[in-house]
Length: 369
Image 1: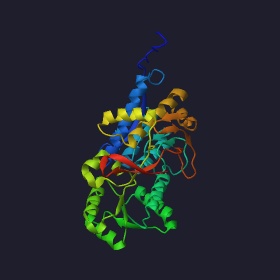
Image 2: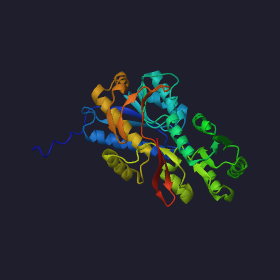
Image 3: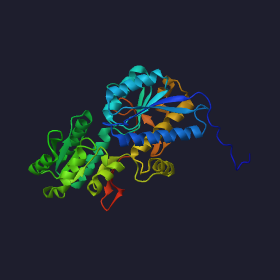
Image 4: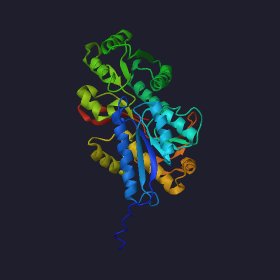
């Protein structure tokens, strides 16, 4: 073989190295997020195996649908542990990932959380869990900075009961209140979209944040606010990222544009991110979300750990502090962050973006953190 034609990698043929993968693939889970997460995981696994696997052994994903159910996720972690996985990866919903992390910690199974952001992913510090997504407090403070820049001083939140939504509301209020901004909570379960519009008028709110489920009641609330002439000029925001996904645009059309949300990608991807993004777009048939990139980065991290430290669970967890991997969105390293009990990538890029009202398939970067 000449120097200009290096040997092709030998396809892996040994016993598979198994990874458990958690994702919301059915309702009431956020199915679009689960689909994107799994696409990123699958693409990276295929690339690892095309390059020879883990020291000649193929990497294999054992996928379990969490359906946004914490108990189902915890049971899946136990099942996967019994099946001998080297680690568990994935999950999008924070309360579900929290249940998975607790079970993984109790069983001594490494868990690399791809996408959930709740700061308190575990009650106590653990060596078994690491996370790629930025903590909610950091992302939502960035969103608060964006809101402050808009000059709006009465911000309503349409919220449903959830640790995730309650934590987000608290982060936002604590961040903007010192600047003279009021945060008004409206119960999205108790109020119809029409009644919620009335409440916005009564409170003199000039911004409404959707801290509620997708597609409903979030989509119905957007439609009601957009069609109410009393609320012309009201900023609608969705910090949890609903407008990132193509189904949002398909469901709401022009009404879904101009709604700022958090996304965890840099303003401009590097060569690796561009290459992976193009392949994900082909797989998904639509623009890949930040969640798809999180999935790919998850496998890139674990493949490096498995090759360099072996497949024993304790060795995998012990490698978190020594990880140094080039991801699609920048160099990935894990560290201890005050107030967070898991090893954390500090920090993935954070931006506030929206869909351009003039071209809803195009995203605009409004603020970076």
